Amino acid sequence: MMPRTSGASLDLGLSLGLGLTSQGSLSSSTTTAGSSSPWAAALSSVVADVARARADAHALYHASASAAAAAAGLDLDPADRAAMRASTSPDSAAALSSGASGDNSNKRDRELERTGSGGVRSDEEDGADGAGGRKKLRLSKDQAAVLEECFKTHSTLNPKQKLALATRLGLRPRQVEVWFQNRRARTKLKQTEVDCEYLKRWCERLADENKRLEKELADLRALKAAPSPAAQPASPAATLTMCPCCRRVAATAATPTKHHQQQQCHPKSSSSLPAAAAGGACSVVPSHCQFFPAAVDRTSQSTWNTAAPLVTRELF
DNA sequence: TTACCCGGGTTTTTTACGTCA
DNA sequence: TCTGACGTAAAAAACCCGGGT
Image (cartoon, rainbow, N blue to C red; front, side, top):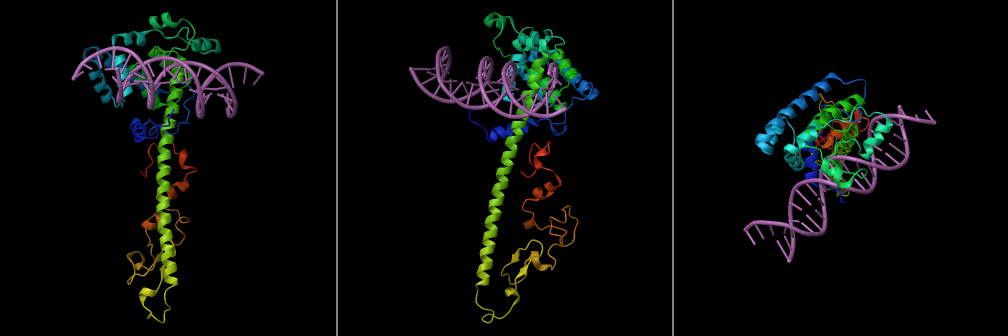
């Protein structure tokens, strides 16, 4: 399958929001003891909302459901809308209200879950291929919305939460578990795409800066090879000045450039930049030194990739 | 050692969309 | 112009496996 790095994919990743900005790193597992009350409250709230939306859906069908979802702050992609159409149909209500598989926490039950027996399967499915055989259940819009909301709260589930969610949604715990695994994978994929774009732009900037520096170097060499000072009377213009911090040379300006008018080109100011990065003497970094400011700022982080909430790189 | 969970990768199924007769 | 069959890409659900705890 072709890798997709299109803008559309990126936009999707951004629009999803991924729910990370408020929850921190993906690695911040929520498998600590018990269901936290915020999580339970969120679940109850979402389920209640979904129930209300489902009641309305029969009257207004997907148009109203879409609006309700929008009101709930849910971003719906076309697939979701399609799923909504299915979920708001009377058939899906049965799927939602069908019984849960109960507490299948041991391995034997897990195997049963995997083989599909005891799961939520329609009569049509059961009749079609019988036992065994992977038969995929398309989650209803409502189920997906609840799962999505829960994912925003916590990207991982402890067994208790998983079971509660499965019971609420009429799904097997295994299905909930798989959904969360896939959702984390999608989140990571989107983040990778964003990171990739970020690095690409960074690379482009570096190339531009490299060009500029090469040009500057060429100018310097040209100055050095210029006729002797005797031929030209000494003048301020002939005096090279170099910023002690960034070592940028004011080339042949008759009057000092604004940047170098001050003997100390980087006047004191309140900069958050670490002194080491600013070259010690300077307390502020000129714009030309801020080629990639966040790269400097990021020195305080172990790696920029570990900043989990970064769905969008702030430099874009 | 065992059970469990998770991430990464893969397979399978569903869905949307474009093309063509 | 409409319609249905067909192919294809993308997304999602499910599975497998290895590693960590």
